[in-house]
Structure formats: C-alpha cells, structure tokens
Amino acid sequence: MVERPTLVLLHGGPGADHSSFKPAMYAAARFAQVVYLDQRGSGRSDRGDPEQWTWDRWADDVIAFCDALDIAAPILVGTSSGGWVALTAAIRHPGRVGRLVLDSVMPGRIAERLDVFERLGGVPAREIARRYWSGESPESIRRDWEDVCLPLYSQRTDGDPDAANRQRRIRWNHDVLERFRRHSADDFGGWARLAEITCPTLILAGEHDPVATASAARRLAAGLVNAETRLHVLPGAGHGAFREDPERSLAVLRTFLAGRRGMPAKAEGG
Image (cartoon, rainbow, N blue to C red; front, side, top):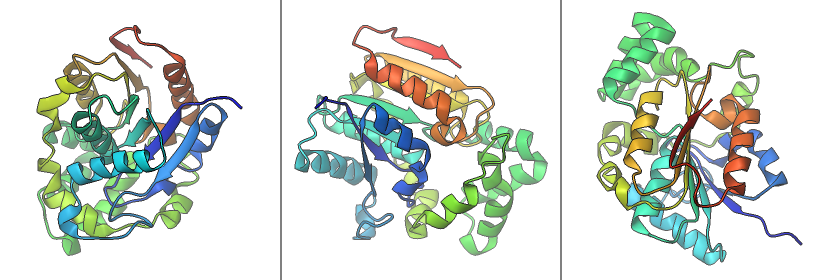
C-alpha cells in the first residue's frame, strides 16, 4: 500500500463531462489516485436548477464531494472553465485544497482571442468568434462556430485522431454552455481575489490557444502573488494541454506533484 496524491478532475465546457479527460489522463493513474467528477448540471450528474449553475455552487460542490470521500488535501485539476471552478474552490475554502493544476484556464481578453483566431483561421474565424461571444442567438451562429472555430482549438500535428470519438462520448448540456456564453463568463469574480490563494499551483497553457491565451496564463501566474506557482507554456499546443501534448503535460504534472513547498515562485517553461 502506497499513499498517492488524489487528483479531482474538473471538466470544462461548461456543460461537458469528465470523458473529455480520456484517454489522456489514464496515464496519471501510475502516480496518483484519479477521480473523475461531472459537475452539477453537466454530463451524468443531475441537471438541477439552472440558477445553481454558478462558479460558487460548483466550487462548493467539489469541496462537499471531497468531504464525503474523506479526501483531505485534493489536487484540483481544472481544464478550461473547470479551472475557474478550481480557483473558486481554493478562494472560498482556504486551506482545504492541497494544490491546484490549471489547464487552459479561460478566457483571454477578447481582443487577444480574436487575434489568435484570425492568425489561425483568417478573418472569417475572427468574425464568427466575435459574433459567438457577442451573444448572438445559437440558431444563427452555433453551426458556424462548430464548423470553423472549434477545430482551431487543437493544433496537434496528427489532427487529434480521437476528436470525433471524444465528441461522441461527451454528454453535453448545451443549456449550461449557453448560460455561460451569455452571462456567466462575466460573473467570475475570482480575478480580484487571486492573492487569497496560497496553495502550490501549476498553470499549463498552449502557445496557440485561441480561447485561454498564453497571455492570459501569464497574467494569472502574475496575480497569484501568495502561491508558489509554476507556469508552463507548451509550444505548438492549442486548448487543453493534457489533450494537446499529453506526454509533456503529464511529465510536468508528475514533477509538480513530487515537489515540495519552496519551489521557484514564478517559473515558465516549455
């Protein structure tokens, strides 16, 4: 019997589910206990009241979940919007979270995101992204977004061979996503409270992420003034470090989990 750190994986979307971590995170079971969780309203969890689809509620759910399972010092691994949930949990429950792993935590500033979309997909991609984030009705914009912009999330040279299977596996609640697109993206108040986070934190970002831009990751790292923080910007990667560059991301994660307090406070690596 060997004690291992416990990773609680918090999916993005919002409104997606834990299967988005598979198969990349299977390898993490070699050095950690891996727990998958579908957040309230998402995946295989109960839909519940849409008024409860909030960062605070999701964060409190995570801590209650860990309490129920006697996970004393969870390492919260949040991808995309799941990173917001992880940050909120660390702010609302000081001392309860062992470590944070923030993968592609969105969003970058709108101008930065639009610039990356244009660089990756030209002016049409930029215009579709602008319309999507402006709150245009889903009937008129969703197909363009899914056909033109979503493929630009990945920059894998092999074309992400599991992409189609992953999309079929995910149980989406698109109502959660629409609520986020229209309202919740502006409701995250954690940026002003980053100094309250004190647990060691690893930030992973893709160099070519059009949503959670590398610039946003650097600002996040700079804001964690009281947390020992490592930032790794992965060259050539898009959105979702564990999916885009699983071998390198898992190696960085393993090193981070093996570390002790006292590591360099602000370190950036590829």
